[in-house]
Length: 176
Length: 400
Image (cartoon, rainbow over all chains, first blue to last red; front, side, top):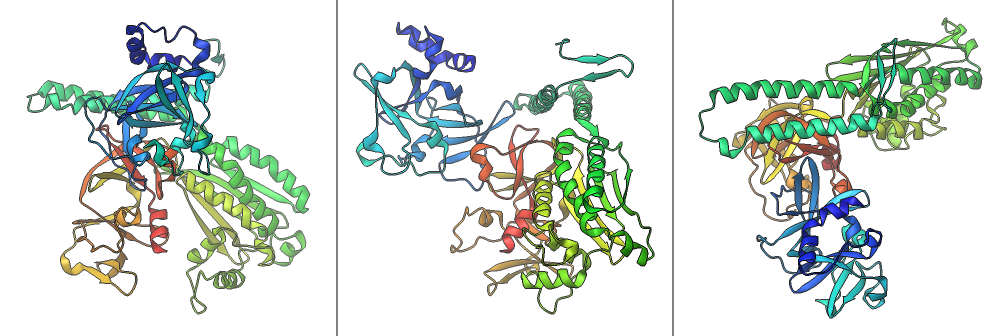
């Protein structure tokens, strides 16, 4: 689990600067989420799968991929496919800027990079503060694993397994 | 560290875990990439670098040598596999009641450990078939004037960057008329067609081709040959079969010595880079207008006329469904690379042929695993990533 710790240094520093003790207990990694922005929505992925966060890299195109896979990057000798989160969710495309980052995740033993508008911070959201999402499942497995609430902030928590799968995960209209 | 490396004094051998060697291989790959990144750094452009270039040359040579040595670390003698197979022969003798003489040659031929581990099962199938169906019973052999003891030759030898493994028996050989009949039934050949032997024997590797009722000689080969086929595909190898009536059958496997590095030509089409193993490229052509032909009647197939033969053109952007099949077609890109494949030659149009280089191969995992007709990713010296094309699957996929 030291991977996750090392990787989120930046987010941690940001959190620490706000006076929040984010990483006081290494055992509750399961409750830790890296939150990021897409348009004016906030999403979160479990910190356990995140291996690092890097700035936008040179993307090389690869054929035979769905439109939301923008290509691959070469990250220190590792070839990692990049998924554009906006395109994955059927949102409008936006040119990458200097806030755009790639969240590199290890999902089911394969690395994948998620392109997001910007990372926010690492939040601890205990299970009691996560709403089940029954109402979002419209047949099949939903990409949303729950809605996390911390104070008046709401983060949409993603199921990374479903996120990287082939299945159609266009978000339900009431969330767009 | 030293606790895990167990030394044997008299032979000077060190036992090292394959994970450590794998880690070393990864590092050597990264090393050669970062050397090339440094050398090709845009900061150096326009500078006069006489002594730098000399040092770079030396550095590149050393890196190449380190790469070779690291690759050698993973090589093991084929004997490791052959010995296990020899034990199986005893078993097969008991099961079939035949006397079998197993002759092993070239057991010291070196091969990548990862390849060797995958070869046992497919080789066992080939040998089992030889023993079971290729070799005749003792009485039949004596009647045909053969030594009552059947002979299976198992040999390995290195030819260039490939290892050739041969399994040869002196049995009754494949039955041409029965295999041809079955192949015609399955639609591989027309009813009047008389294929070359090498083309005909290839059908025994078709999934589920043989069934017990085909011919005793082939019975049971169906599944076993499938295993052989899929293993060979994953090892980037190829298979040839020769057979002579009453004299025997020879199955030869050709496999690259190492899976980690590959000698490739780098091609560019649009923004995408592709790499192809150098040994499948037969020619690079820059055709004039009248050397290109359209056959609208045959689903708009395009052909390249090259010294009298017609070579089908496979457009990568169409193959990968990057363009709309019904849309007006763009003119053929200027350069055509011609490949030899088992299903005949194909020509692939590209915008540019960039370079020939030894690339580091990475398997396609996760989301990338679904890319068709590819062996994996190639990391180029420039840090770019190219898709290594599997021309066999490209040719057979495009033919459909």
